[in-house]
Amino acid sequence: MRSSEGVLVRLGSLRTCRQIGASGGLPVDYGFWAAEIKVLKAKVRRLEEDNAILKAARVFFAGELDPRNR
Image (cartoon, rainbow, N blue to C red):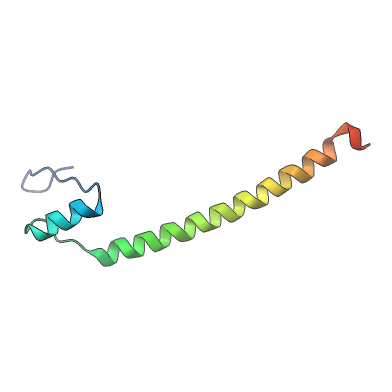
């Protein structure tokens, strides 16, 4: 990605963000990143809950379809 001045901008880590912000480069909006992390953590939590439900359903239906249980 290139900025309007044609300078290569790589934001690979928080350390890089701090260095760019401290050197007078791009302004760093930590509030945006904090909000983004909060949203992503909520999504991960929901996906983990969904995954646990699907695992339980898989075990249940595998037991129901097992011919040894008939």
